[in-house]
Image (tube, rainbow, N blue to C red; front, side, top):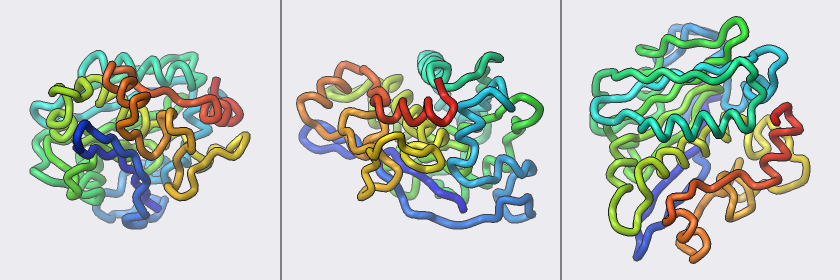
Length: 260
């Protein structure tokens, strides 16, 4: 099954940043087929959450490589890459390290849905899990999701899409996050879903799933909470461009599943 988890942004009197789970959009077989968007690597066609243990532990894969492909004008900032590397290094047991490559690909058009994103990935992705290396893929588009407020989603076991134009449009202005903070926050949240949070292949040590909103944390101060509204506490944290952190329950879940 191919799932997506959405990180959304809405504007009100100040701003409201939403993270919520979307329903299953479409299904695909785990094995390699000739269907549009199917990858030539059976591991990478698995459902979201299937690689959680492999991300967290070092018994099979001791390093991570991240292939980022961006559409014209929307590369991820070098500070974002540093933030994400630090984030994963603090959680995942990867003594071989984490490496990132970033290259440009052609424009994808004004809007893309998850099916179209998967097809683009199948056309351009070249880094796949093999040997002792776990490979992740991040696509950064120059357009929007078909729902204009979506900033990004995770899909399949090693795949993430960020809507770069929407992130640029929704950051850097008065009373808004910087682009680096918004990019980093969206990507780190989606990587949390890749690592099986919350209660999606990474079991909970103690109950803390917000079951009304899918695979998300019930702590409003956690990176994996489904929405971060404009309360003084959250707005002050985000307004200062501090990226929300995983709370102790989420960190304990990851540690119990093989993380640090």
